[in-house]
Length: 484
Image 1 (cartoon, one colour):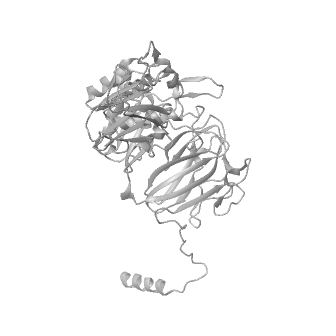
Image 2 (tube, one colour):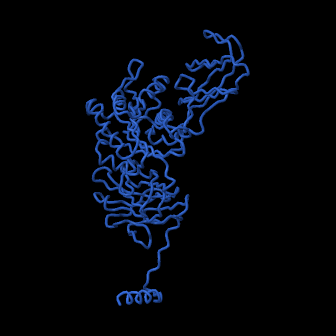
Image 3 (cartoon, helix red, strand yellow):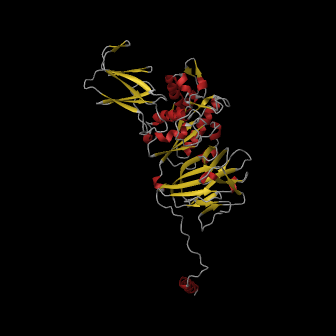
């Protein structure tokens, strides 16, 4: 009898007419296709084409977006006009309680967050830290992550102690399905690798813009690889050896992803060499336990290491190599390769690749944006032989000089300038002996300086190869190459 009554009740419910009090199913925000973008303007001034999010926008299933709590959210006016002319301020001490929530279908998404009035802050997505060292007002940071639970959570975190943080805008673009997720290369580094701001610059390179090689590495990787930079200023092996910290920063890692551990500058002045090696081993082993592939790298070379024409080791580079060998994991000698490049440039030119602080003083440790790009190029070349990490950079291995790449084909010589200055070279097809040009069969070529902002449009020059396979000499700017 109970089953019959339940069946009759179910039929009655199905037959009941729709009433005004019944809730209609919410239409999702219009973004489900790859390439679609959603735009959110945080502040009280509406902007055409953007969803306005102000201090009254609390999340609901009906709208599909809003803050989890609005008690600690305040509108904030900024200078200028447009979408970045206002922001929402999250009151100090309540950042972790005030997340912006957005309903999204499962997939891969590229998220850009634009800061409001800040000096420094981090950003968490899905409850995990993904953006570090975000500096300056009205600046953009960008990250790609998977969303698997139907909702994206964004919260501000860990700014200067006791300081309000603010966000001015956010864009969300679907880049594909979960199955489209690219292999990731995580960079565990310090301030020489960390993302510096503004993150994107289009003006000519200036020594006053600091940069981290981790933020530029992606431009030198194949399209199938995504570089996820989890480096931060002041980081040392002690930070990443903390398993909770490492687990949080590697939250979006999948089995088979790579983790490059490039630390040492901050360890050199705080812990012993043995402690440093032990920390590296802890990080590498924990990385393997998470299903990732650890790669230990020595830290970058510094101007302050320059001594009597050489760059000495002030970052435990030797100990990093020893730790990798003892563990049996891959090692990248970034310090040696970077130091060799700086030495080939000469000290005066090498200086131009380090950050000139706003005071005018030269930073002896941190690269500027141009220098960071050169380190990223060198790192990519060192990684080019690792499984699917190759193909993002050209490796012309016959020059023997780190300032120039040279590839010899059947019909031409391809030269690429890797220096920050234009390079003028004489190409002599025969008869160069002891500095004396014996034949006039030569030409002069000028190869433009390497542009780290557009590395895919490499500054290459092709020189025709004579039918005869006689030697070709390339000389100039201290370079002397003989190609048979």
